[in-house]
Image (cartoon, rainbow, N blue to C red; front, side, top):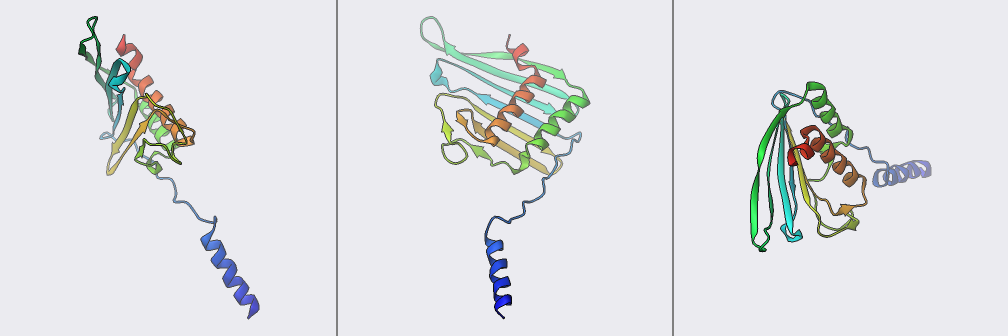
Length: 176
């Protein structure tokens, strides 16, 4: 009887402590209806602000558009629309991007990382916001990140994903 009680207590302890199994990673498939977005927004309190959006479709079409806001020589706020650009990426590049989403287990990330706390232990002010999203089939997920949040693997991974989207969209070339 003592042995049975010991086993019962042991099993109860295991069930309430770190022996939890995590849900298996759900991989995101690439389909023709896949839509990936990145929205980048700089706060206007920094003198000038760059706001842009990137949309990548499952057929490889990339559309980027945005605006720049800043003060003119007289100190008056002005907003300039940057011409929309469109290009196409090849299926291999698109698949690599989907693999980046899967590699960071994007579907398991929180929807928002915007305020200081356990998910944002290092918090810097005066940074930008970035929102990524993916929709494919019946999977839809978006994550908003304040770029001033640092100190976790999730922040590092999201920043790398955003850079990959910018790289495929050729954002730097578009801004010239």
